[in-house]
Amino acid sequence: MLGVLHSKQRSIAEAPLDRVLRERLARALDWLANILVNYPVNGDAFLLVDYPGYGKNAGYAMIDSTRASADAAVRAFEERLHMPEERLTVCTIGHSLGAAVALDFAARHRVERVVAIAPFTTLREEATRVVGRQLARLLRENYDNRENLARIARHNPKARIGIFHGTADDDIPVEMGRELAREFPFVEFFAIDGADHVSVLDAGHDKIVDWMNH
Image (tube, rainbow, N blue to C red):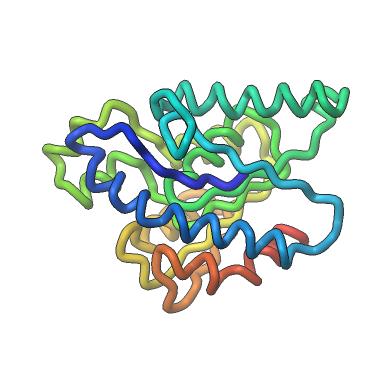
């Protein structure tokens, strides 16, 4: 699952973050096409989720509504494949805010592995860095990657987690990815030298695909 985000709803505190996300949308879609073209033929399938309130999907980009969309996708898989979720092999992949959605999903469902590209520690801490502590308090919801990694460790300790982060990322600093890996030793961390928040998708492509397949 690749988190490609394009918000139509904004609050005062969300606007600067939203501007960054909108600038990443077209690039992330290009990367998805690239990874599919060059991805090994091994039976893997990909589902691109357009979150509520993002892209052409109506609604509001709340945590609960995003979870509902992901849960509905799982139910659709169960019905189409005539197979319960317990027998499905599910992995998640997300970039930036999409990484938080991928980890949130993994904290609530059994997954085999998670690829988190350029993740923050918490959305509130990232907002504080971008707009300051006072405006960050206006965030209505907070994705907490620390909390979700802790839940994964408790409930699905066999899950593999890989973080890929560009060392020149000015949007979500690489220190945030490193911090998550330090706090949770089961997380595998890969620094992509010289890559920024967008170029990490190309510069880290081969490492990401290789990790996904081994």
